[in-house]
Length: 178
Image (cartoon, rainbow, N blue to C red; front, top):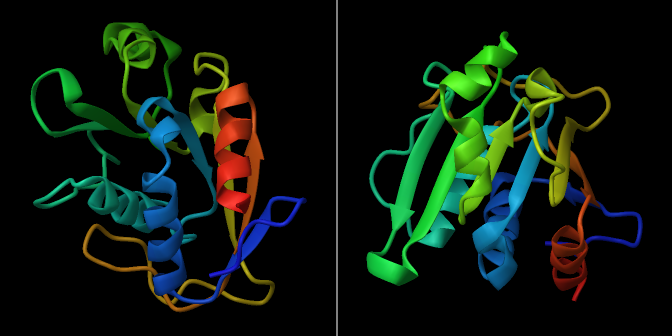
């Protein structure tokens, strides 16, 4: 799998590239407390990337998309060394009051990895992301099937634009380039 270029652009030609990227990201210590935004159209591969990342971090069992629940919590390990992970999907998020009512401010203030799909739907209430990934299908490609919890990433190649919004994010990008 290619490393990010100085422009933070990589290309995934198959799902194995997605899995390899997730493995590399999971190996970085800083990811344990990062906030990562995932942008892209339906079928771009956001949830597939999250599943590969969660598996690489040690999450076992079924990994559900939080499309209807808005957030799915995960934990790897026990005690003081436990890694807490929250996977958000703001696709159906419409009311900023829901942010406070659901306790999301507290979740984002706590230690752990936060992954957010469709973060633009919660613009104005989300903190600055450490790392932003924007997944797009290569020009002229279309997803092979509509997204679903049970479907894997279609074989269409993707371009992934990476950017950082914080010092932690810049460190993660530098480590991914190494």
